[in-house]
Length: 342
Image 1 (cartoon, rainbow, N blue to C red):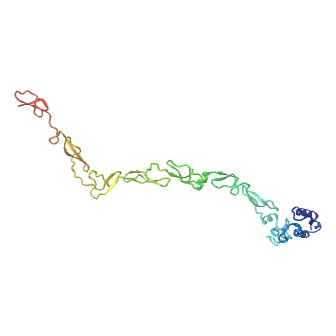
Image 2: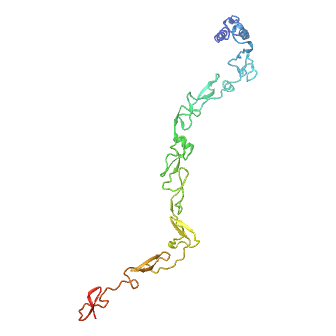
Image 3: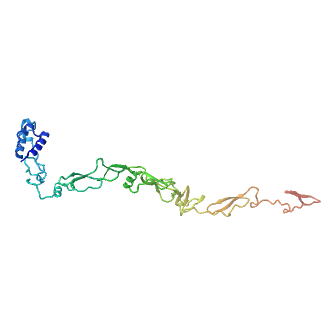
């Protein structure tokens, strides 16, 4: 049965919510019970004067009390307490449960939150139990290259701060912004968050050739530059096993090898061996024989006779004397002071 105080409270709540017209209050006496109150609600809510929908569309929430069990869950509609919630068939409250057990049974299973989180949805039986942990308003998720500042709350932070170096090194441990001498950050393999970070590539300084020209060989191993191109240093091909055949040239069928701009052969033509002198004799004209490495004469120089020798100009050696003759004389052609007496 409702006492006068309970009735006054309930009537005021229903009237304020515009669930029950004031005219209906006169139909409810202070001595009537809850069943009479429910019947009155049905009568006035279904009437045309209520301005509400047809009786087929109207449902009343279940009446539950603070000490009800989960059987009166409020999820069903009806005019009695016993309307079979998820917890069972309804009926008398379960007085065997203590407050902590009631909280846990009704889904308030948390008693603490992680750092930065705050509890929400407290149990009415025991405020030490609550339904969930939430982050403070405004907390957000930070994604690279932005990272959270301060204490995290469920992987969310009050603010985010950009750190491209951290983001790049987490993306690839080989990413850097400092390369050794002769190298640079590869623009083709740079960090997506900051192009100044990436993997280093070789500038291949001093490697001037992408192909090796004829007559040369690679000087050391190839260098792969930032574009993936192999580049080379070169040197003249020594053509091991081949020789310079000079003017003679290679023998018939000889194999050739280019050494720079020079052709070398694996077999030279036979040497005629005309050379006899290690140097060209005085008074002679000579030619050098490359195959033998010696000189041979081709004639005498001008003024040279008698096997390419100079004539004797010494008057004394020729028999002339510096004297006076009584008869006829023959003067030396190189010095008239010398005569030959006849």
